[in-house]
Amino acid sequence: MVVAFPEAGRVLDGVSLQVHAGETVALVGASGCGKTTLARCLLGLQPVHSGQIHIGGINLARANHRDMKRVRRCMQAVFQDPGASLNERMRVGEIVGEPLRVLRGVSGSGLRTAVAGFLEAVGLDAADADSFPHRFSGGQKQRIAIARALSVEPDVLVCDEPTSALDVSVQARVLNLLSDLQQDRGMAMLMVTHDLAVAACTCDRIAVLQDGQVVEDRPTRALLDAPMHAASTALVNASS
Ligand SMILES: Nc1ncnc2c1ncn2[C@@H]1O[C@H](COP(=O)(O)OP(=O)(O)O)[C@@H](O)[C@H]1O
Ligand SMILES: [Mg+2]
Image (cartoon, rainbow, N blue to C red; front, side, top):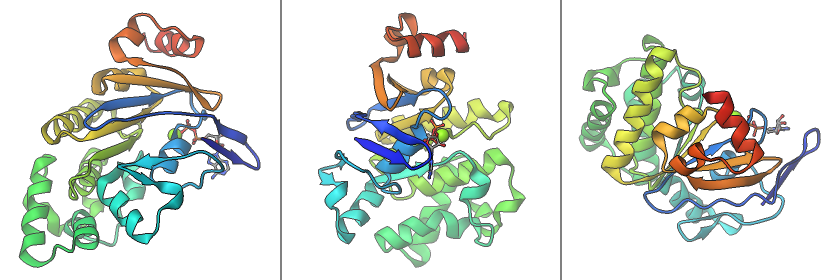
């Protein structure tokens, strides 16, 4: 797969990555190496110049409106900045319920009950549905974003630096929450991070991105114990 920007050139250049059902894969690499760009391609938010993306049997390049709706239902995302990704004018209940309403047609008391369940699943209160996002801390906002992503029971959850914007004291709790939810629900998770420690505590496999390509892609323990590529070694050394 190739993605280029006029100013930055070929950011992704022959990158190849597979995430199987139920798998947890970390995409790691130095800042600016193209991790977010790759995540945005998967989510259909970034056009791809050449190459293919297949999600649950759908080729993203040829996807029509109906296919895109299916993709959105089976793949959800949690981004770095929970403040920016939540609409401040909507109540938490509306935010969490929106994908269910739009993508699954759930409404009324069924929607309210479902939202309450998802808020509780992420460690919030059902009553929080009535509040606006500004009342919540960064960690709580990220829990709201996670509840929203989970609401349509996605097969794949793409997390792009989900804890980088949070206080260190709450980072581990949010990562544990993501890991627990991933295991409970059996969904696949792509964890995009510059931080090998985040990859190590959430993922079975690590893919290292450098110069637009995946240069090493191995089980977490094996890669951490004996990195084979210079880019992986640099990340391991930086995090120990
Ligand atoms: N929309 C865009 N327009 C132009 N350049 C971009 C755009 N998005 C990302 N880039 C450039 O692509 C490179 C990779 O960015 P990004 O995918 O955000 O990296 P990472 O997430 O690994 O830090 C950077 O050089 C960045 O400046
Ligand atoms: Mg990024």
